[in-house]
Length: 220
Image 1 (tube, rainbow, N blue to C red):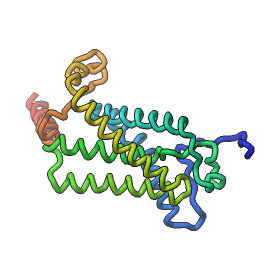
Image 2 (cartoon, rainbow, N blue to C red):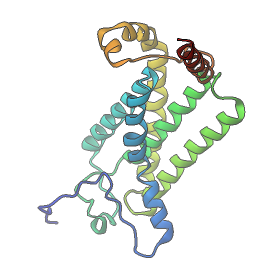
Image 3 (cartoon, helix red, strand yellow):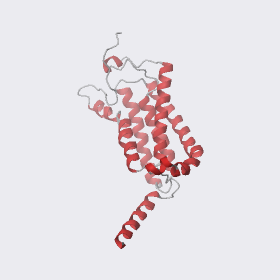
Image 4 (cartoon, helix red, strand yellow):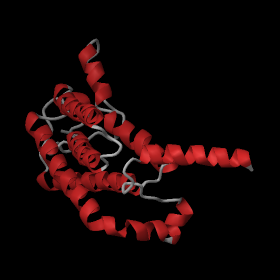
């Protein structure tokens, strides 16, 4: 097969059969990792700058690096539908979309159990059900749209769960002791990097402090 001279930027390049409403829906589902990365984590850094969120995003980058490394080593082809999708020049095992979403779901689930003051049982169940549902839908979408085989998406899911759980343990049981030092560093002070995961209910804490600051400003 002749390698095409032109290559598309595949960040949002998702194809589906014309007239296939389910395929159209699943094509948007396939873009969820992009929305999380560009919308979620970029916004988080701009407005929150929490160390937990920063290390969460760093873990996803490390997971992607591991995925690329494995793909380059295994070099397993995508299914035959890659010709129609113009994706035959990249490898398929394991699925990076599936790995990303299952890493996200696993890490976020463990994080909700750590910050018990923010999430009561009903909220925790609802939020985690949402994340795992999106992960399963993303995995299914990659097979339905023809980008991966079943084995490739399951490999990505398993790797995402393992890497996500491992990275959570590293961050919260190894690196966590260095969070105060990062906060007090020149870098942390310049960018207002902080960690509020030790506060039992950070939402109430910020709400109370915002109200107190408003009252104090009126008194001045």
